[in-house]
Image (cartoon, rainbow, N blue to C red):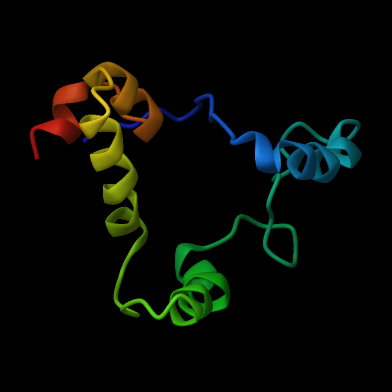
Length: 105
């Protein structure tokens, strides 16, 4: 599977102000600064994120603790397909370079 390294992410209007507030102090920092870093400024590791954020969120939602990030991507994709969204748009939202990579699976 091929994914894009840099992409545009569409944000719901309900969180745009919060994200702008979070990133505004970063404007004059090193361009390599992580937007959402680990406590010591390094990239967040997937396993740490799941332990600190993912598992508690799954528990609070009373969902299976074994659900992974990619499993949680399926319902929104199914909704986009049901809405009749073009496969290229869906692939772009997922960060895939080709619609066939995701939609044929």
